[in-house]
Length: 234
Image 1 (cartoon, one colour):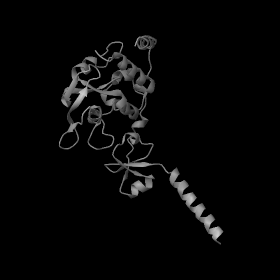
Image 2 (cartoon, one colour; image 1 turned 120 degrees about the vertical axis):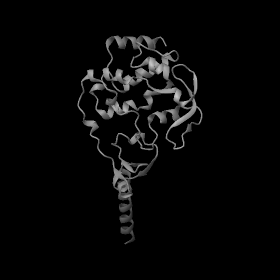
Image 3 (cartoon, helix red, strand yellow; image 1 turned 180 degrees about the vertical axis):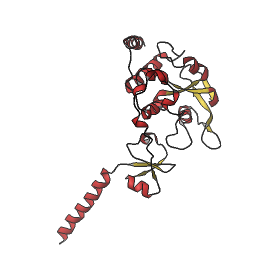
Image 4 (cartoon, helix red, strand yellow; image 1 turned 90 degrees about the vertical axis):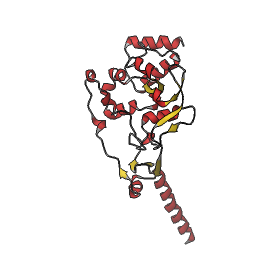
């Protein structure tokens, strides 16, 4: 009898562990939205409560993320670029009131950043510009630069992406650097064949090329040759 009880116990608990292990981790954001691994915001959530399944997250007071339908948009006319095609400004994917601009400022500050009273906006810190090497302490003196400009990306293949991918690209930390506003605006939508920063040119070009490869953007023959020559000389 004891032999059968032991077998039953092993089978029962073995099945339970196997079932638990196979369940996906679901993240409940601070705004109580349950995100599964298929959510475009899943990897970007920093402040969350983990659950072993969507059912458990919902049972704990969470709610299902609304489907925006943005992933189904058709290819757009490349000649009709609008900033809004990459989302309406900086996103706040985890709904913690800190949008991408302020998350990047906080991440890149070489000292502990100072936030406003609400804890939503960075107002001071210490930043070393990727473009010039100069130090800045006032957040308002800085723009957040897209290493690969959105318009440049649009012209090199992003017009065929869906809205969700374009918004992710516009808020990808790998593509973002806090720099002085004057240099960011002199750069505009230019690629490296037309504009290079006064400092860190090799790092800038290498990072630009990395993003081109990551997002499978399309380079002309001239651009391919230019990147090869420039990187070979670094």
